[in-house]
Length: 218
Ligand code: DX5
Ligand code: ZN
Image (cartoon, rainbow, N blue to C red; front, top):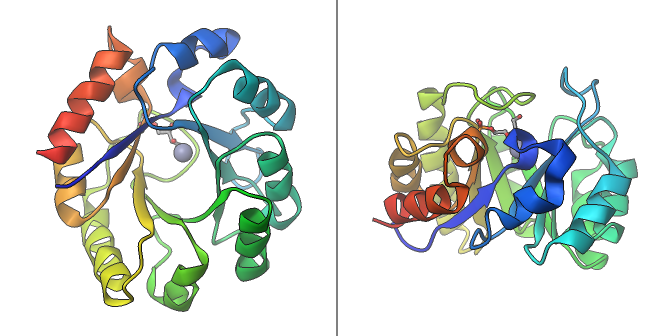
């Protein structure tokens, strides 16, 4: 494929050493931060104060993935906390167009995520409002799950829609992305790759990032 962005997910990092863990993946394009609220998904991670601290602790821009209810209310606070990109879930947003415009107006990239069972087609007309679309390749909530191959046709269809509309938005995949699945994602049209366990589970996380990039760009 062409240029690939590799975004390590700190969900698989040591939460007691977040600033060191951020530095351990220097060379990564963005740091992926999973915000979970125990309602939208059955897991709880972190919120605005930790994002504020993390954004001061690293020069790597933060890619926020909000797996929370009522993103219309909370997403703008993550832009103020220092996020360079904020992803909300289509299934949770009450007014996705208004929300995407608000995120952009506050100065961050606006992005929308789709769970595995959510189709892209109903959202086709919203694509110009977005800087990135995230296609989940596992059910959101936990790291270390197996990649869902059945999402490859959705990645391909989404890339076709983006091209047909002449848009520039990034297409991100998240869940089960590893050295053995990243090439299939890239071939289907993804260009931004989140990897949690494949990076932080490796002996050398910075090398894991380089290896993933090489495979995605091959
Ligand atoms: C899962 C999160 C992912 C998670 C991916 O709900 O959105 O970002 O960290 O972890 P891996 O890469 O281990 O599947
Ligand atoms: Zn994520």
